[in-house]
Amino acid sequence: MQSVLQDSAKGKLADISRRAPVIGAALGWLGRYGELALLALTTIGMLLTIWAAFIYAPTEAVEGPVQRIFYVHVPLAWISYLAFFFVLVGSVIYLWRRDERWDAFARVNAEIGTVFTTLVLISGSLWGRAFWGAWWVWDERLTTSLLMWFIYVGYLALRAYTGRTAQGARAGAVVGILGFIVTPINYMSVKWWRTLHPDQVLPLGGTPQLPASMIVALMISLVAFTLLYTLLTIEVYKLERATAEAERLRVDVELSGQE
Amino acid sequence: MSTQATGARLAWEQFWAIIWKDLRSELRTRQAWMSMGLFALLALVVFNFAFDLRVENLATVGPGALWIAFIFASILGLSRNITVEQDRGPMDRLLVAPVDRAVVYLAKVVGNVIVISVIEAVALPIFAMLYNLPIIQPAIAPILLLGTLGVAAVGTQFAALAANTRARELLTPLLIFPLIVPVVIGAVRATEALLTPIHDDAPWLGLLVAFDVIFLSVSAITFQFVVEE
Image 1 (tube, rainbow over the protein chains, first blue to last red):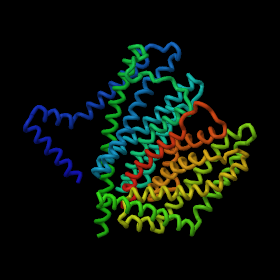
Image 2: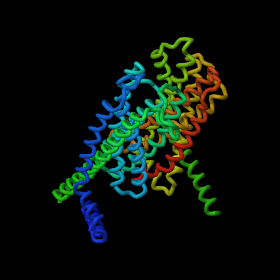
Image 3: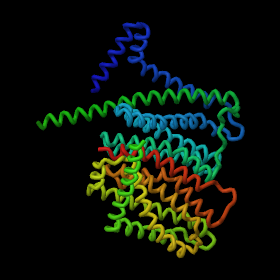
Image 4: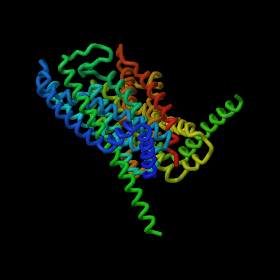
């Protein structure tokens, strides 16, 4: 199955190189060196982020140096939402098309999103301790992030307990869909319940309240973390597919041994 | 048009047939009723010690204790029910029948709401006595119904989802509780508002209605994938 898919991909590539040699060569190069290039770009981006967050961006007048956590915290939060959205996308397409690769895509995004949300919660707590004087405050954004963390930890636990079965994949897809749909309702209900968080810094359609240099630092960080996310998605996806393939081969070997 | 009407009538008949089947089985065994009812009462007694209830904090702590008792008891009963169904096989036989999965799901939810409502009807007067709160008023009925519907909607879906796994006792609560937060907040706050009326409070009943409608419709569509063999 795997080899058939790869062959068809190679066939397509050969077809493209025949018709458009330059694009074909570029695609071939991307396949061979793309990941290395992405790794290099991610490393440069991360170094730039450290420079931008600690040296380039000015120290915030009210919050002091601790505000620099913001340049890690905000991009991680945005990307974890994006990852959880991709869990939804992967889950819906998997249930529709029944293609294992979409299930792997959803699962990989759940893993990365959970790790990123963990970092969001930790970095947020550190900032909160310094600025609010408390590690934790039950406001809507913190609480929703924590609930999201629980939902996707539940998703990963479900996947771990069901193994690599079609039934586990379907169950996971249903959790991936319901978990994402409930999150905005969680947010609204906690918001009505209590409010303490500082306002959004980039209101949609409004003028940014941050000085330009802080926006630039935030954007550098956002690009760097997006590159990191892309690299991780590719690598964890390949690992996930290789693990599934290895399990399948082992089952084949065990079955043939019994005959 | 006529075939559509016949289909709808058939689905309606199937819907009530499944509910009636579940209720009769429950009336015969009384398993869920006994375990859920006793658990809810025990929880109310334990909360009394845990929160050291006094006259001045009763109205604020009471609704929370009531709903946590109801929700925990419901989840306990729901996961027990689905385990019995999976082990003894009525679920398999039901799925062999040519019934739309959405009808099966909605019938299961309504059946569970009826079972839980009976528990609540017994536990509520006892709660009112133990906690000395004027909770028995007509306005509690929609709160109880909408809250219970939300709990049953989430509980039925996820109990069925976790039933096939090795660790269903762990997975069922782990999956249910983060999703049920709007129901907890909405139901507890609406009950509180009933005891100590506050003006300009959020529309808690609206929140419950929105949650129930969204969750029931998405679950009715996705339930077929949960029970697929």
